Image 1: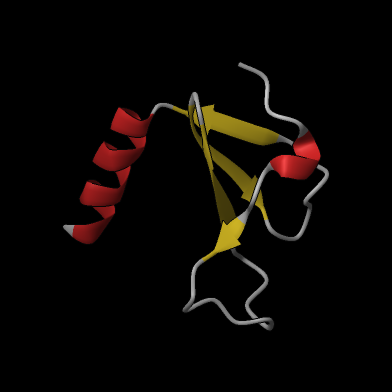
Image 2: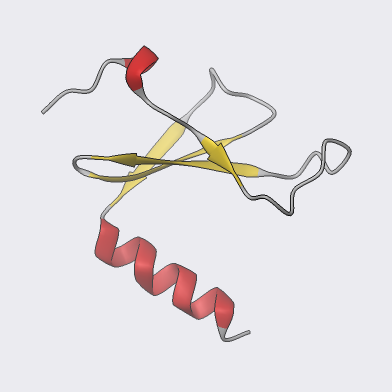
Length: 63
């Protein structure tokens, strides 16, 4: 399934500030979770499976 770019809703963490400059944005997609650099919204993006993203988020929580 292909999702039109203008239909994707990118979200930044609520704890991110406009002065930080090192934020990533996430988007829920049918194929998984999209990840992009908030400073470069038209730049490269990666897509990871929901399971891999869940493992990544759990690992960060346990740091």
